[in-house]
Image 1 (cartoon, rainbow, N blue to C red):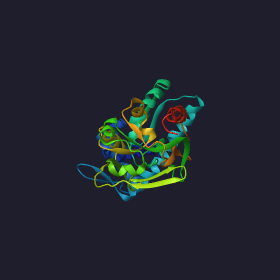
Image 2 (cartoon, rainbow, N blue to C red; image 1 turned 180 degrees about the horizontal axis):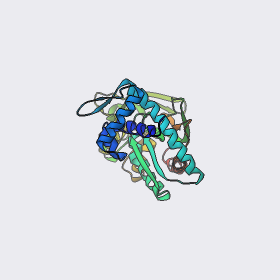
Image 3 (cartoon, rainbow, N blue to C red; image 1 turned 60 degrees about the horizontal axis):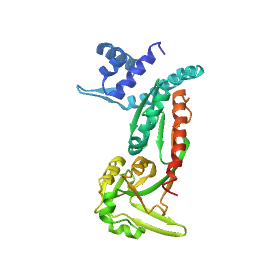
Image 4 (spheres, helix red, strand yellow; image 1 turned 120 degrees about the vertical axis):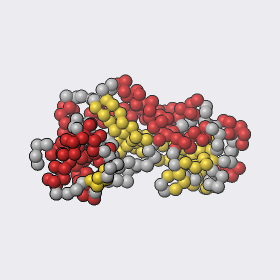
Length: 309
């Protein structure tokens, strides 16, 4: 490998991410002409075309997609090696790439990240909010906060907290339509429903001691969205009852803007995990954020116990 092959690989990876060779060149301090020449040199050395070029965009070829996957692994290994050297000097700095669900990210995580920034001012955050699980390798994510255990064996998980799904609505909605006293009363109510890749979350299984009551939310009259924050906003606006994670609601319950419905009945319980690469070196900044989040989840669980048993 020539001494500048790594630079060519970084240019290629940046161009694939941005869809623009010129933009990738600018980021790496190269002129458009120099960036183009280096990419052509890389393709010649590999005897493969990496991009299909048009006047408007770059599109990866099949060979380009295969090479990009291995480039990212190689480049990450180099970055991890440099981070390991910093770790020996106990430096907590640099950028952490984090992903979380949209509503939790806006409702609670954003506040916690501000606190983290005060503790570690030399760490920068790149936050992606999405209700679908990211490909941590492809998207170069350091940590993913998710409300279910990992299905990918290449990922490791650290338990952060218990999660509980609850029903909630605004005081205005409940004043207008009444407060359900039993799950069967839900037949007289309206709902806002989150819809994921596997379909709508409209199957509710209530439990109270030995008593069970399954209920399916009818979708004909429901408002639906694939964005958890939108579902919460519609509940705040009085559009109906929402089925949410308790972690999406803490501030709104504290302020009285949302109220729990049928809290004596149990709905689905799960766990909150931080997912990360199993075999990748964890930089000090990532470890610091992971420990901080575990600390904040632990403190917040105490407050939640005051709302639900």
